[in-house]
Image (cartoon, rainbow, N blue to C red; front, side, top):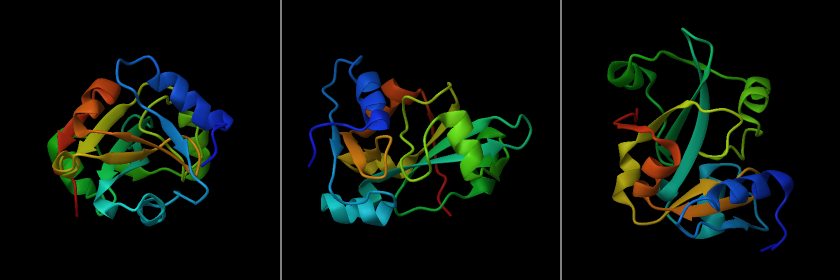
Length: 160
């Protein structure tokens, strides 16, 4: 594990440092680009990986962050029923321009702008959760209750 963080990972660490909880970004020698890769690199259950997915709000065109358990795919119909937001797919260029990170390393925090955040209730079932930290091999550990502090997100059932 490298102790010198790359620029995007350092940006996440700097953001996390403002809280009274000791969040530590870890840069791993293995890929954490996918939930499967991250679970293998960390030796944890895939469900403990918090996938940060960026969608486009169909009405406003603004980015929406959906943080889901690594074992889930997002059901857009459930998101719409719970929030009234219709989600469209966002391409890599949109994600990088609007959020500031490349797909495969999008963290749930330290984004270019404040966005609507939707959180998967499934994540509440785990004492330890791992989230991307800005690069395809950087992560940080947190608890479900930390999402409230870090994102002010809305918890819903969103799995397909």
